Image (cartoon, rainbow, N blue to C red):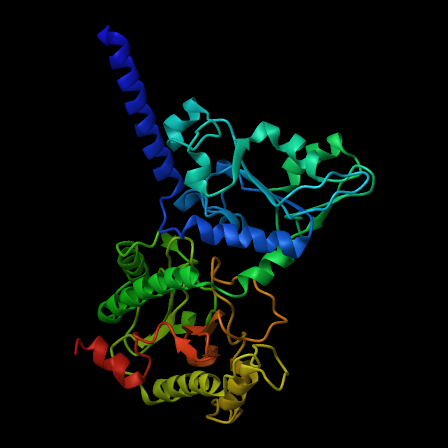
Length: 452
């Protein structure tokens, strides 16, 4: 009589272990509450006014094999899930019509069937058969991927040309949804696909409190890494050593990967914007531009500092450095919530403020103004991506996170300077420098490099 009881106990114990493994697999990051993602899905459904279908990339299609699978930004924004090969279906309330029944707000997460052989290599996955899957993921319903076509057809009209909002591939980007959605045309040849990305970009423009908390953690870890670099930069040290140190420092503070390829460019390469070899030996008398930051739980940061390799700026280096810092401070001072932007040739442009400052302070060796050496934009949004999706028609205002990063690059002088910080606009419209803990004044940089 005891054997059945023991089997029942073991079955329950194993089920509990599986649930723990599945939960750990789904939520390996510092994740926001399920309710935050649910609110985003409802907001998108209301904005679209129609059926939305999105697919996550397959594990083999991840964009960064070096650091393992990384979920696609929009899919993560709406789900908070890192499961590869999943799909989501969202639809708003709809009134009944002659050719279409009424339905209430609908959200379904579709998970692929578990592949136990593959899981020996990739680890346990959350499967659709798990009765706890809705509670774990926060979706109203969780189904097997094989049920997706019939669920979509239930929600779309059969009499017209029903649109499905999805991740339509652009000319320079791929889409995880393009190929999987092709089979739906076999079910209903009248289906048309419209791009949902602009709607999601509109939602992602403003960060909620949970997102801001994650960005702060990314920034704080990256600031600590830059502090370590301040102490490690010395003549005859290889750039790669500094890059490795940065990644170690933010990694031990919880960042899962760099937010972008680290840039540690010294001498002439301080003037090369996207230099990524990081393999030169740093020389006394030159500067090094360190543009490097970590990604914490999918959220990016972006910080740049320029250091004198021997710990002391020359007079010319200090002149250019102070002009760049002055341009950043001028842009900060000119900021007006709900009005300022980063556009060129706009009366409310912070870019124009910074460029005008550079053009009215200092000259090159030929006596010309320095504006022509400021060769990139002043800043960009930061969020799930280091150059985050956003609605560029919206002025900078509450809830937005972005960089301010003026720079001057003079190749003939082997002198490049960039200073970049992350900023947030609070609910009162105040500009907050998230990376303010990392000094940027030249005298403070020299003091820290001296270990004081």
